[in-house]
Image (cartoon, rainbow, N blue to C red; front, side, top):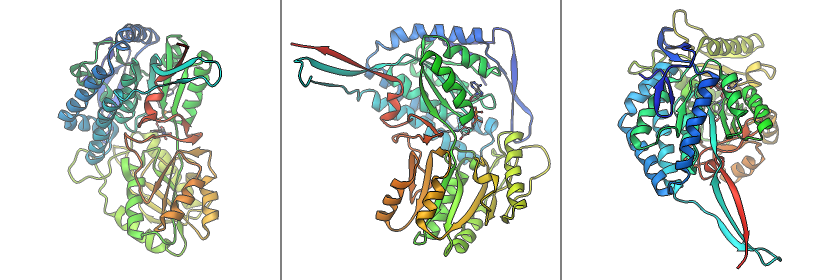
Length: 475
Ligand code: NAD
């Protein structure tokens, strides 16, 4: 297990020797003691990135593509080992961890293919007689800051397009889950990623380390995934250096089940939208609106499926729901349930926080959740489904839009034409129309309003790491 900083292709301790413990959320024991980067280490990583940039930007797209493709293949050779590490440090059950690992690897394949699809354009200026040549250049050194809920995928979703575009990166993984990102470095090395191109700095001093890097004029991109609160701070820091920001922030996804929806399909879709990653996802269905005429059969069907899930240590066979990542997350989920019940919600399943070590919380279903319940205003980030009813589609679209977030919305109806019309009225960056899963490496993932700026994945994901250059000439 790698537990040191990864700078310029070498493993080393922090400049001041500081370390911090990473816990196993299933039993609260220490898994590893990890080096905690300092500002000095961050400056060393930028020096390494600067050195690597000079060579990497001059490589051909085909050469970059082949390294990324090799990384995809090596990732798959070690996928079991990586998934196990994800479960150990994050808690998620094996199926979720394998799902994440496969998704994470896919970014290397997708961007191996995108790297060679570079496009530009040439055309005459309308009146001056000049020719206008427009092309994309690598933006420069990118600082990547990632959350704990997808320790591998939130990193590869940034690393792969950055490398494809020609940029070096310095990654600050979440302090709860730095081990997976460190474990990916031997894969990148073996794939042919040169020293200094990818650097990893776990750190307890995130604010100081990331702040110092954003204040350095060599850094041209900051790509962050995490809470809106921290994203806002990084936007302020990026403003000083006019650093290009890409922000994937919080969500508060509505999940709307229309009167004509296929109840079984919608319940299956909600199982994915709510329970993938045990609810610890920015895309998790947070406010569930079901038409009043089908609310009861839908709730019964969904509750049956939730009741069939097995809670336990994510490494054990047959376990569907592992522990939440830490005590704070578990306590917040528990608070949301207590608050909703105190305000009159109807408890259909779960709601009892287990005793003993480990940050466990059982699959929970709340029906008739009152409008003033705090779980409707904030991300639950746990295995708790909060169901409300509606009678009028216009009204439910307005309710769905009444949030400062705008990441993803889900809508179930058998009438596709109406579904598309309603989708256009939803103020969200992504819509799951009769689908509980929107994430795909080939699609532009991202939100509007306070859910963020920019897109990750797809063609759009590479633009975050590129700058457009225009050359005026004539002949
Ligand atoms: P967080 O914002 O607390 O932390 C994210 C990262 O920022 C971590 O690496 C953390 O160490 C670092 N960080 C914290 N304070 C910092 C500071 N002052 N300066 C620089 N870095 C700092 O988020 P989290 O708790 O790790 O993750 C959960 C949040 O992430 C949720 O709000 C969730 O919705 C969001 N999320 C969004 C997406 C998306 O794509 N939109 C995906 C996954 C998670």
